[in-house]
Image (cartoon, rainbow, N blue to C red; front, side, top):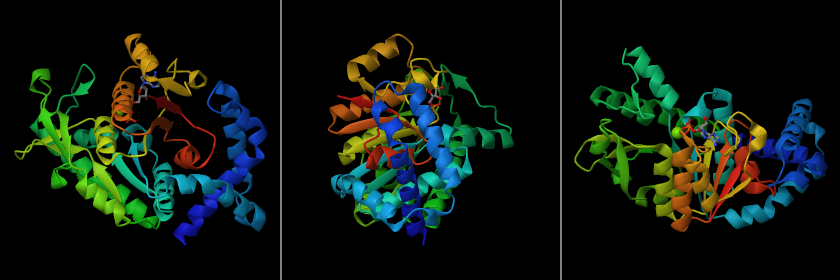
Length: 338
Ligand code: ADP
Ligand code: MG
């Protein structure tokens, strides 16, 4: 039941794409700015009108499925590492849609691996416990109490809620954190004086890989081990990138709360559809890529040099952005290429 509703959602969405293809396709990848946003708005309006899926003929449905066939064939048996950011995880109904897309991918034989952050939820729980969040140069200062909260919130609350949502969507998910089977080992960055914050030193992807091969969707909370019993807080983008590299994943997809890499942070039209590694470095130097976007482009660059074929930064708030990236010609967000 959950599977059929997932597929019918995909069908409905693809069908809307087809209707608007005349507007949509010419702007794929380059110069699509406002017109692309308009197309998406129109697609969503059509989708809202077509609430009754019986409005699509049986032929419409099979045509859309058939269009997805080359992509399904391309990615079948391939690993796709998806990082879902805290900032884009605030909306519960959107979270449910994202995990339904994951369940769909697993059902058709693709191996999705979900790596998640959870900054906003950590702040909520720090607040409930009367612990002031403390940042130094944009990085969270993680004292012992804060580390306990990070581990409990990421490894339990956020992780298990995602696992539960995937199960509800008809998928099979197993939640783990970086400590399980030393999936993520890290070194405390003592020199930065920000407490229990680590940089990833190694990834053991055996457990994650064996879960995917058995049809489970691994859901990884990015709490690392220092190998001596201490938990360390690591950046979830970096950890996802290292996991993708260790798995020799086909793609790394970072889902966040912006449309992609923007030239002007406040202007969604200024999106870069495609960026080379050299251009990324220039934009970081110019300060155009800043804050939480820096670890994202850094880990994409590292992944590309370690054999991951493609890396994307996409909008986790846009319904079905994941399926649009994977199963249609229309690229969404920013693709970083080697
Ligand atoms: P996540 O929880 O997904 O990791 P972050 O807040 O860490 O989210 O990173 C995404 C943020 O990066 C955006 O919300 C935006 O404020 C910031 N950012 C900085 N530079 C850029 C840029 N050039 N384009 C888009 N976003 C940027
Ligand atoms: Mg971040």
